[in-house]
Image (cartoon, rainbow, N blue to C red; front, side, top):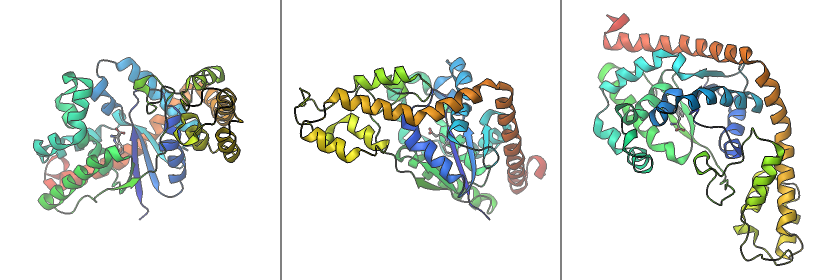
Length: 328
Ligand code: TRP
């Protein structure tokens, strides 16, 4: 059987260039190696943004446009909207019956997020966030889950749930494994990690002028005061981005910066040009794709129908194993 890969993204914001290296480029590659399910996880978005549903609604389509513009191909992979496959919610409910609360309270993101975002997010649904993620994966017999370091505890929990279920009701699920993705550090223009919530992101969907303006704001080596002061590329955010975008002149930029031949203004111009020329075909494709909203809805509905057929099969099996529902 070919290996099944499942991944998801919360539609809580527009995608930015940090997502290209951490997620989108990898997904495009995985399409040729695995049977892939790429989920727009709007229920997960509700856990932290239940008061900002307009934002979720707008971003579902925007995220889909980004996927397609980068080359996620609905004829190769299943791209679907979580809330259109209700079988997954039923599976989540069943899994919740066998998941001890103590396992969930132990997941680091539970306490971290509450201390960051406030007590309002400490809902029943939020506590169950990793159980829902487990259901996303198990509904399709997902074996491989590309994740960053922060999601590792979620997958550990998923495996514990699998073991518990299998020992209670018989072999039903496989233990999903993380596929640790190498994510280069992408700084935002204020020097912190690029993130929508820090307001420091260069978005895939923005104008070339906006990108230029943001690149101009980057803090470079603070010791490089004048154009001809020698700089230290290893501590420079702009250099980090030149490297992430695989600038062909990287060697020269490094050398010229160190000897004070290349000033930061010039170096930022080069970077803005590089980002804009890399994104140009994608931004154009984005515009093209956005025109046909009906087609976009069709793509997501078709993907969700495919996902639903698979999830239904798995849910029937689960009901049968337990002896409830269609399994009575
Ligand atoms: N928890 C993931 C995140 O916050 C999103 C997610 C939801 C997911 N369901 C998933 C990832 C299933 C992989 C597989 O980024």
